[in-house]
Length: 340
Image 1 (cartoon, rainbow, N blue to C red):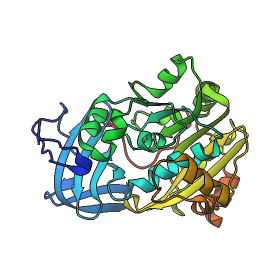
Image 2: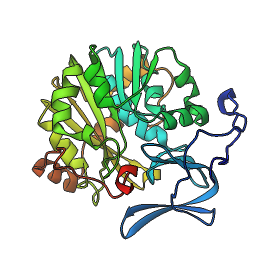
Image 3: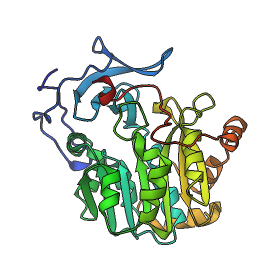
């Protein structure tokens, strides 16, 4: 498609975008076949295919492949490094689970630091909390952020919010140089793949030496932690959980099924203060502290998400691997750096 990739015209929520030339990227070689299907390779012998209406964009930035696809089943879909990141019809499941449990478990969250999150959905959910004064979103890839600001109309209001401080930088470097501390730090990073830009942000040394010192005394850290299904939870989920256990006193793993990911997904929340999981109290907080109605999460569903099935619970209990720079685990796939 070169530098003249297709664009779309959207008037969702009253915001319209005229067709324009997209951001400058080289053409990507993502596996889109016959203009009608996209294939995500889950493993060497398993693929997840999507029927397409059209390819809205595909290209490659300095750090990662990016594609925006209009799929027949899941609506507009954002794909990075060949991996589904977010689908229009069900991204609310992932982002509500990522953001709201930590903010609801905190007594009075006023500031949040989001590592990654370039599409803006995590910031959108954090900004719904009435107590919020500042959301710092730090993503390494300017081109991806610019692309999402332009095309993901559901997040237009969040990107325009004066409480949002958008920073283009490596999250590790940004946290190191900042003097301030945060009530909540969120890891909305891509899954760790060989050659990807973010696997070092899942390591014990990063959590211990850089991230935790930037949390306030009652602060909470939460991260997406990859696939957490019966057959996939050993890839990175159990290791991320065990690694965080080495650094924080209270660590909670929870999961939810995300249809567009074709799997159960995992998150890990951690603090040196205990968490309140009372469903009634959480429902009261949701009603009082969040603007608008949540589509997926309530007190009971969050509590139930922390009860893992026997297979996954046993693995997490017995996991001994600690994620380090020299002993990392990766999900199937490769980032731009690996291929180059």
